[in-house]
Image (cartoon, rainbow, N blue to C red; front, side, top):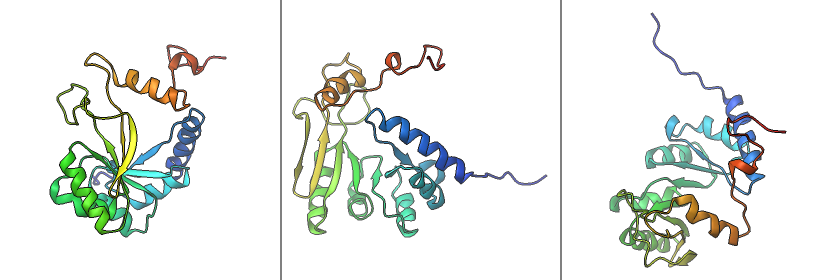
Length: 194
């Protein structure tokens, strides 16, 4: 009996990325290609980029380092809040990171300033799920920059509000029309209408 083998069809990844990007762009949504499932494999990342994806993401700095070592220059997002010992590598390797604490933002800011670089930050806001994130009360809606760190925050309304209900009015004010399955040409059973 032979050993198990994983075959990756790069042409299909490019095709699927192109279809997904086209569908999302028509609704004002940008697609990010996540490479965590393939351990930052540069060939898969290139196939995603060839399909029109402009930003890659991974939750592991070693995977992002693998992408950078392979010559991938596209923007890359760290899909988690870096720990204190990860700050220097995060700023060096990733263009953007998710963040759940002001102390880490301060450290990222200092590191980015020292490197004369802007590091993007997406603030994670606790939606009363008990996971991680900043409390929503002191955060303004929108974004800004602070000493080398640009940030985006989306506050929640109350503990019973679902994240989509929080985003919808913000996106609407920004001129985006969020996807709604009832107006997308899809029937309830997932079949295309018309």
